[in-house]
Length: 71
Image (cartoon, rainbow, N blue to C red; front, side, top):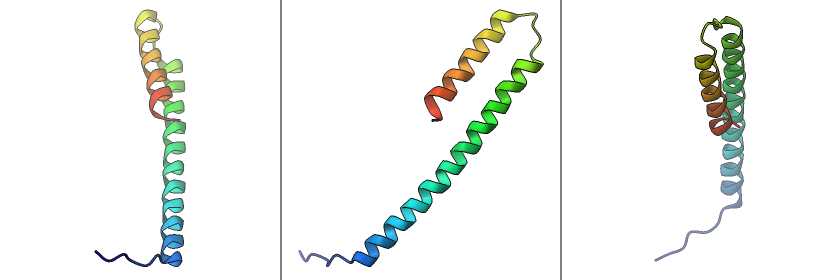
């Protein structure tokens, strides 16, 4: 079994590509967080208050999803 020579330029290129990928992913995540915040605000404004128990459960569910999956 032959070992391949380590190419520093190839490693640098790979790290640059990974860094760009992480930046794009962070941008997408930040947009998703902003969208979720807007959805939560809309729910707080538009949800009728005739069933506060259901409203509270829905809000808790959405907040738990936000906390668990989007940081």
